[in-house]
Length: 145
Image (cartoon, rainbow, N blue to C red; front, top):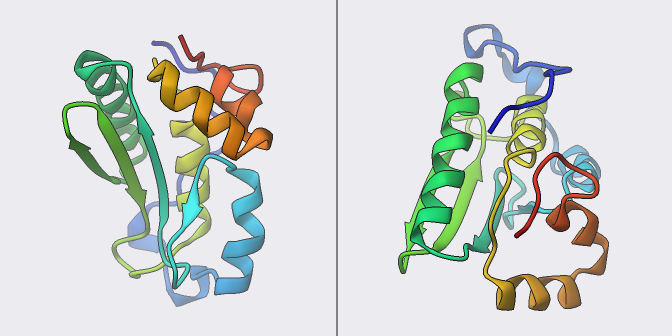
């Protein structure tokens, strides 16, 4: 996996202050830019969940996303359960809320190719047709196989 040139990078955590916090309204508005992600109820975290084709596909996604997180020094929580159910949770740990960094990281993670479970992919597109271009790779470098 090779990532396209990064257009924006995360602001170093050491320089983040309360003024970087996004209000719930701003987070809701900003969420439209990352349609594969959902806000938690209090709008302090971004979550993306999917079912990978198999265990190896889930690990490949997690490892590639981890490389991005390490490069950006902005680390999400990865939850791999039931051998192929993947959830990624992003928020700015230092402030306990969402900042612009979180949306930038989510967009970068969305560039990682994912080999989805065909059944999950079909059901997800039926549930959320606007996400189809992002899931199938026509809007991102990633491609669903």
